[in-house]
Amino acid sequence: MDIWTTLLAISTLVAVGYIFYQYRNLQILQQEKEKLEKKIQEIEDGLNSEIEEKRERISQLNRQIEELHQRAEFIKLDQIELNREYEYLQERNRKLEETINSLEDRIRHLDKE
Image 1 (cartoon, rainbow, N blue to C red):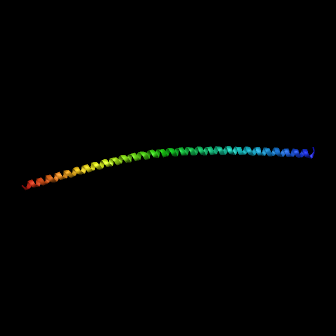
Image 2 (cartoon, rainbow, N blue to C red):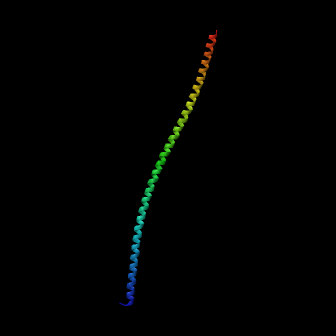
Image 3 (tube, rainbow, N blue to C red):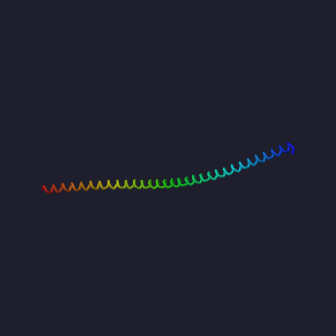
């Protein structure tokens, strides 16, 4: 074997070794990529689940707010009705007191006669 054949054999072995090294690195990178993609997917799934839970909670809170607004409106209407009734009763009470005072005056007037 002459020197050129030996150099060719050595360079071929180096090239094959380098190709194998690159292939192995590519495999490792591919495995790492798959692990990272899996991890990313798990994180995304977790975040999507959390987001959905938060959206549902927001919907519940919005429904509660709407119910509270409705209740507040009913209470407001009840308050208006109660105020009207109170005014009516005050007026009625005032008239009754006037009637009582008038009757008391008549009784006093009759007692004097």
